[in-house]
Image 1 (tube, rainbow, N blue to C red):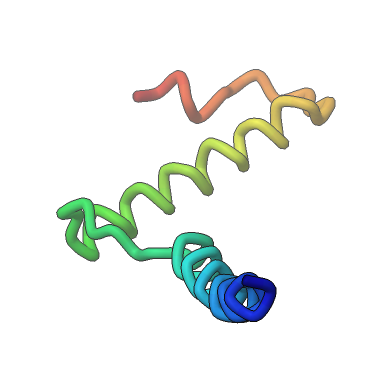
Image 2: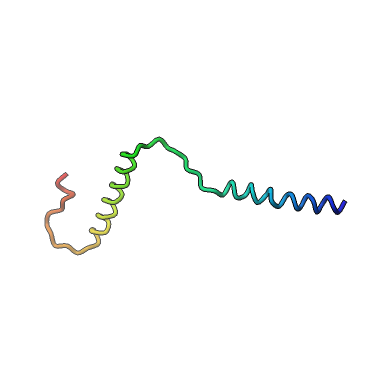
Length: 69
């Protein structure tokens, strides 16, 4: 009985290791966006971050370029 328990433990440990690492891997899931859409989203994020930083600066300029649109 003891040899079967040892054999089971020896075989279950690598199997658990493989299953655990397979489920922990990063998987790339395509969502259907094309390159231009990805670039537009990244550019919009950059613009939003820029204005978030600029809003904290003390600038004495009466014209806000965002108000022209």
